[in-house]
Image (cartoon, rainbow, N blue to C red; front, side, top):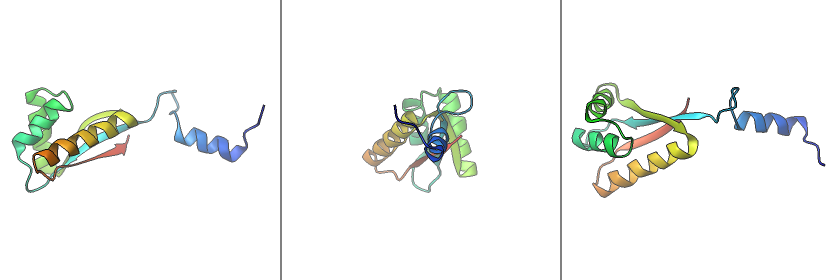
Amino acid sequence: MATIDTETKKKISSDSDSKDGQPPMYKVILHNDDYTTMDFVVEILMKVFGKSFEIATQIMLNVHEKGRGICGIYTRDVAETKVNTVHTLAREREFPLKSTIEKE
């Protein structure tokens, strides 16, 4: 059986699970712009992120007032899929809505 050198072990541990054995989590963030309608942002929050109308409205107002808002916290794959879905739906409606992920 092959052994793993110290440098490889460090790389593996920094790229993988957190201290409690759970995968690292990522915040999905929506960014404000001057063109995307508030109604569309609420629609995205309800459709893509499963938020109620009330919570979606609160997040949308946060995005509008503070320039960005957290939509949810997910594993990397789920977060990336949600960002891609937001961008696809925004493009279909010709909005420049931007969404990103940040490691928690």
